[in-house]
Length: 233
Image (cartoon, rainbow, N blue to C red; front, side, top):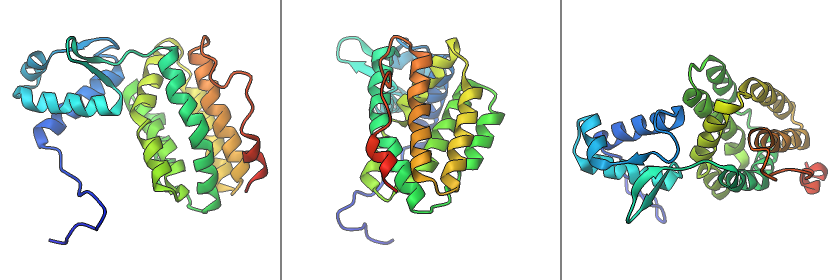
């Protein structure tokens, strides 16, 4: 067995029962089977999945770390509520980071492996959860080759929360066909090597989604893309 690379923490595999519970809870949350605000009682979930409370507890901790669940010492765990404030918080950070990451990816001439496959999966998705997760993977395929592991990690940390926002928003505003077309335009610009154009389209895509889904939110309202993006690349 090879020794860990100095300065890194070896990945700890998630036990299979915990992984089983984690995957099913994620799917249930993103499809609305477990709606925002729904209490998540360990003993009830353990009975539902036929496991002890330990893997349920570990799965809930992981989901809390991903932003899909909130945990309170007195109230226990619950599915995270989605409102304009939560959406604005998530998407404001994306607006600050993701267009720049994609601009750098284009300049790296990465070819964006996995992006087209994610688009195809989104088109073929049969429910909001699968579509939202495919969309999430598409965005990651664009920013992952940016060359900055810390920037990638920061955007990765937002992926599940963004998927939850989109899944909830599509219940009242089913705009995924428009967003799928915007994804195709972004990928086309990126593959053409137009770093500034891809970054601008991505900015407008992210800001436009929040304006449509949460009109009371000010995210991206009245704002122009970072002027530096337009002059770089």
